[in-house]
Amino acid sequence: MCSYWIFYESVELMKLVKNEDEKGELAREIIRYTVRPKHIRNLIEKFVTKYSGEKEDPYYMAIHWRYDEKDWKDEQCRRRPDFKICKDFELMRDPERLSDELGM
View 1 (cartoon, rainbow, N blue to C red):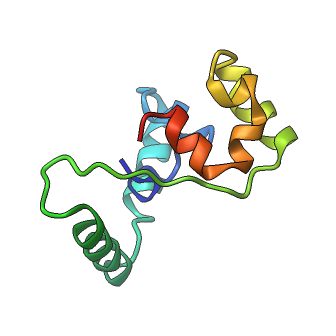
View 2: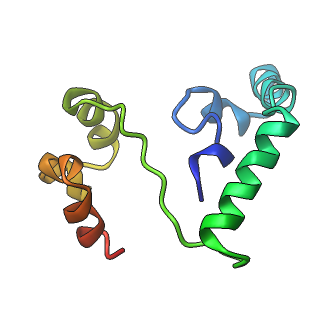
């Protein structure tokens, strides 16, 4: 699944969505009323179709490369210390090796 499908995954907002209280309802409304514009959704659909074919479950990977080592470790390794990149951050600097490690 590409990151465009999950707009708020790394935001505290997603934790609230499951709540049945007033904050949960507000979080759900924020997501409902801040969808990407139709032309952006269409562009993304065309991209997915072009680069992954007509597969029902397309096989491709999107990586957010903006992370620096401290940012990555603070956010990702805190939650998943056994993640390969947390053990060997050099993987993030070598896309070929990363894809090999991930079995792609």
